[in-house]
Image (tube, rainbow, N blue to C red; front, side, top):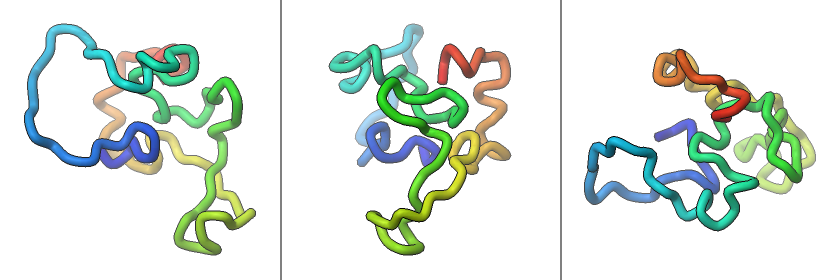
Length: 94
């Protein structure tokens, strides 16, 4: 899932199960007030403690560079994944 990186990124796939209900995740169990299931798909919805409107470009200037770029919707993968979210309220399910 390339548009979910950082705190939500999968590291490996060992099994795929189709569920009839949304499964719990480590992050939304530990800090549900901060991380929703679909977290980090909408840069217009801020994290409770920081803005998600911009991000650092790791490639240019390194991880600790002060240079920031606007965060793109679905982290730039909108052409590929936007249909997955077409009937969702992305302010609620950010």
